[in-house]
Length: 472
Ligand SMILES: [Zn+2]
Ligand SMILES: [Zn+2]
Ligand SMILES: [Zn+2]
Image (cartoon, rainbow, N blue to C red):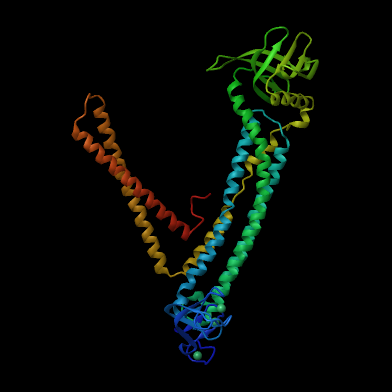
């Protein structure tokens, strides 16, 4: 049923709508300008020879038919019914924009779970330095968890409001010019919500990133130690309760009066292992010496003119001088202080990190809730015919994809057959070469087609559901 809306000047049947001031107008109360002028002074297009703003004479610009609002004099008048038809899609795309913003946080949970896996791997390898990693991780988890919960509340109340408003407009199913202004208000409301959501999410994600960065630095160091440990762990004996502090490759060590040799230096909470590095290109490692740290009498650091920093370690029987890059030497002193107070610098049990393994941050609920809201709105707001058309189009793309894959598989098989049958021959016949070239060309054409096809599928998925199945 067509609802008659009346002109806000004369009460006659309205046809036009001014998007600037929101007035409904009849044909009599819309001015049609046939000439467009340009005012240099105001850098403005005007519709009279004399600029209404500065009253200077404006230049002729072009002939054009422009509808002007009688009320606000701006060229923002549109056909009301045509405008009404566009509104459902406008509203829906505003909603999708908010939805996309919320989807931004999905990657945070993925990153969090990857981080937990990395820390678990390192801890199980008995590298237990930086006990505060677990504390930071727990704060990080709480922060992400709270954000997910907050977004759930926000999206629940937002969709409730949207739905209520749209219900009062009967989902814009029948053309009614009186709905234009409230529908525009809804779009403004959604855009404002988008902006505030963007702002608050930005702040929250920034805080979360800080934690990721702080933990990441430590985990990088532990990961580095882990990769070194993977190379040497077979060479060193297994000792009950022994945990790795650090491995320093390429350390020069002089024992007693012998000449200095190059070693990999392994520092644990119990022993020092010296692994001899042999060979220039493919280095072989061999355990040369084990120094029980409880036998170490003296550790001193000194500066020499020729060799730079030197650390001296003495046990009852021997004396070792260690030198290498300055950084490595100063790290060495740090590792000794860690050894003296190892309980302070390490985490004592694995139960803490193990708990993280069983506590998942899930966005599944949030995703499902939003999906439900979106699907409902999609059905009530957009025309069913359009959805059907889109779904049919997507199905045809998916079917085409299957076809291309099938043909690609055939072509690849043929190419393989030809190259294999050709392999033994001294000179391959020209027919073969021509065929091969044709097949390769066809192959690259199909590969290009499938890429374009996939891009189209992605585009549809993005418009019709951001929380598509691939995100988990
Ligand atoms: Zn009128
Ligand atoms: Zn107006
Ligand atoms: Zn002017």
